[in-house]
Image (cartoon, rainbow, N blue to C red; front, side):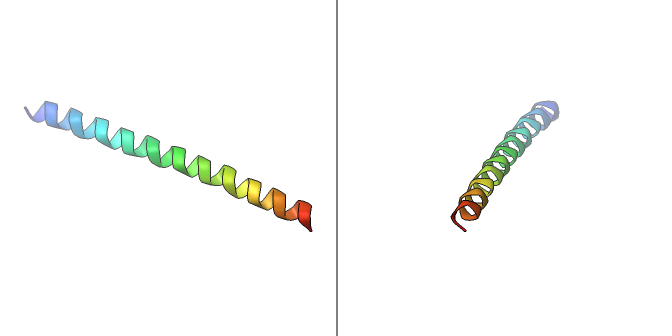
Length: 42
């Protein structure tokens, strides 16, 4: 039973980490676009 709970927790943490990393990459892309537009306008 403990092994099943540990596996469930491990999978849940991996999913959260994947979501966090994906969101971070999206934010970096968005920031790069904002900077690019700003530098083109000035």
